[in-house]
Length: 197
Image (tube, rainbow, N blue to C red; front, side, top):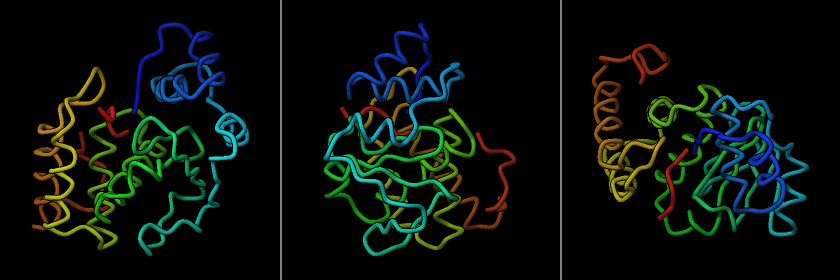
């Protein structure tokens, strides 16, 4: 979930003043804005009592323990998408992901984690998630199709390719990984989630 910032002050202020500005500020941070984004404490204060910080290493998704290095996760049932990321922490919308399959939930988490390591590129974050799923053993062919069904519904925007295009890119990469034509640990040759509507 990444945007370009037109005015540093406007988005930084919007990011700290209300939930609608939060995603934009987050996206600005990864597009090279001068503001570093909120701290997790600032974000939790903004979110209020509905937000919950889960320390790194403590989060389980459908019984599967996940981590993104040493970064904690904020569970925010009011976040404007399925997941997001500010430098240093991830966000999951527990309401939006509730009805999704386990592999799609793990994809969302891993996609947002990918932004922590590779930055703004939505395609690279997608492929980070697919590589992680294959490497960690939670992604199989059925899960890949569930991810494609989920992502193909998204129209795309200025920074997110259309869902069907994202699906094909991820599906091709998945096949390369399982057929042994790509090293699952390598970032070489690799090209947040999109809006929820």
